[in-house]
Length: 324
Image (cartoon, rainbow, N blue to C red):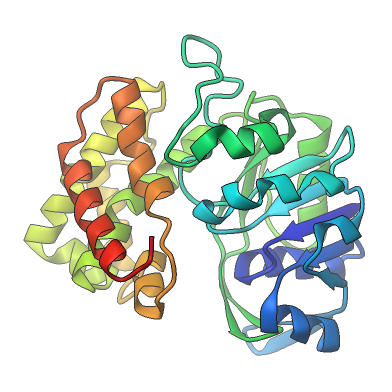
């Protein structure tokens, strides 16, 4: 199959490398020093004490990739809308787009039926750019669990995890999602197909909506945030609000909230991605992870005062630092 990775950084590069090693026709779309290194030396993946190198096509021009069977978008959520119109040269009539992006997806209300069917989310898709240029009918949902990082241009470290949960917005087990799942499995990754991908998204988002901004504000690692009574209480208040929003949208959390927080604490002295982005001076995924939950709350008339407050504080801190 022809598979393009738009945003071949840590996670996108990881997916592309494993797929290329398994024999798929992969194009990595990246930029800067990372792209230059991949063109010259290939992409190196380090995992445990082992490593492997792949040499797929690498470019900064989507048009040069040609029509694809699958396009994987693996960018920060806020980076996708300004680039959505650049994807068209890779789209044929049957091209599917796998959104390996954190937070509430812009296509959330595609295929749900009812009064909110087709509703747009301004917080994650301002101006409906993705809805217009990508189209929700192309989408395969993807919840990303692995951790990876670029240790230097052209070299990425696969830290842990190997699961990418997939699902159609409509809930069907279509030929295309099954085909993509099999490709990932053949590449050595886990890729279960779920008939309710939104529930899986909410379980991951449930922690992120609280832990990410709170660690960014405090500088605390997960273990400290989740065991200190004061910050644990704030996280729990935010998560209870998020759970109420999810429930109003027909999603029931499969895990008890105290167990969810305890699970995060057990990870140890881990810095969330948002805290890492703050420390490295990178733009943060605040709207997709926090602001979008507040927007969903307004849609279903569920108040989110704790989320709103932490969102405002984190946004101000990010604005002062020039990261939004």
